[in-house]
Image (cartoon, helix red, strand yellow):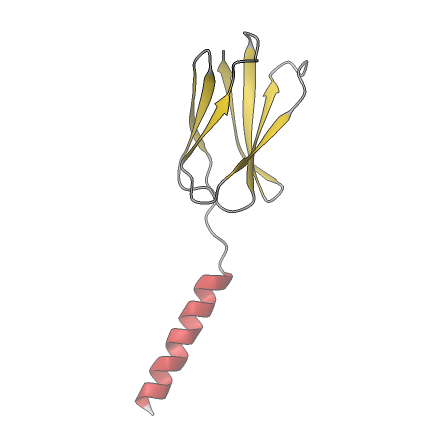
Length: 104
């Protein structure tokens, strides 16, 4: 009987862990150079995470980049970006979890 009770407790703990949502990551920092923008995350990205890059003034269209689950950074090509102020927004399953501005 003791083994059965331990099994039930283990299954309940596993189910609770599976149901509990993963903690969201956010943007820790953004490093820019002439050819790329490196976005560093506070923790590993969850599945369904994207980065949106846009001009801070709203003049440039939004470009979206998919982030691989488990990644702690994302390198965005910036060769074609003119000098200016931009913002990068981290979106996880449709919810904004962080935004940072940077200058190129």
